[in-house]
Image 1 (cartoon, each protein chain N blue to C red):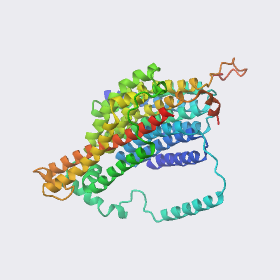
Image 2: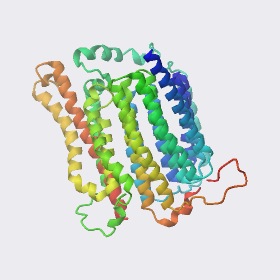
Image 3: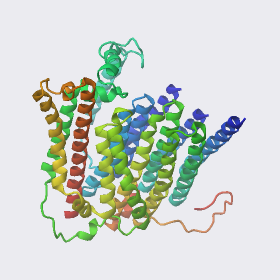
Length: 326
Length: 112
Length: 91
């Protein structure tokens, strides 16, 4: 059964990817990218990777489409034709494709229990998680505790990406009276989106908080929650205009969220060192080692969620503010 | 006995919902004008949600999963027509005119 | 029975993708993307039941909420554009 699903979805993926590359109209490419993202989320879902599917759906179909459209509003609609060098590019891509296909001949079968990747640490994680950490979602246990350093690096990568975008696009202070105010009035004149959107924004934020705190028991966690809450605020910004959204959550708060989230994660590590353990060894956070691990995971997931939410909203506002000056 | 009745009912709901989904996809592909395609896609979306989710809720009884299915159904019912409004309004305000021609001579297909 | 419904939804996704690839105007492609989104919600919910994992319904719920935001962004994009661009929307 999974074979039939996978066949459908992967074929559609290839067709969509070819269409994205071949089209010249960038808006069409953005819409096809959103479809591509949904196909990937469905793919991850049928492979039983629910956390990754949730992240892909939340980030790829919501926030990324909005940011691409904001970027598209600043640039031209059609791709410019680049001349020359076609045979070289085609040759390089073909050689690389054939190498990659040749490399897949050595792959173990999908889901083979004898594959090397299932022999090393994976059984250890699956066996020891109930004993050391005792949360049902092993993915969060691996992400938060066993591989805590990697996740710390990821949060700082998100932080660096946010800072990079803000450097390029500029942070404008004191935008009190720009003349083109009515262009960014959002969807104020449309009754139905206003009505439905206003009802949905609190639900989206509430669902984001649910996903954040439920990450230990089901699919969820900080990254997904940050993306979902950012989507809720972006919906508000689309409805009421970007200025209203900036008044509700000012830029200083967004930057504070990003910096605070990353620092919170680091602070947990340092606290563990101060309390006598190693960096990011959560067992020392409480008298009971298991409770300490759970507390540590909770706090770092909160840090991750804050950082991701602040970063995505900062990037969105950076694009949208440029648009209103243009 | 009541279980079998519920099973049959949910079979029927799921099958009709699946048929609705397929008809909607067919309409979105084959109809001739953009606004007709919008009609087909949005009506069948909402109807399919109204049929498939109760079919699944009957299968799972009074559990948390049923509540989540109910929530998904309500959100789909709210956001489906709004998205349709957004698409049709974007097209209309950008200048795509609805076809207002008289009926074609071929009477087996509708014009718009 | 879930298998039949999920196959119907997959076939509809193929049809919607065909519309996204063919559609002469850009609005057809936006419509196709929206149809794809709602069908993904249905597919996720049905497959979650098919696999017997009701905890995976959170994904369908998240996606049902997020799908609308993309379409609203498209509406705002078209609203803020200069009007004479209507002719370049066919390609």
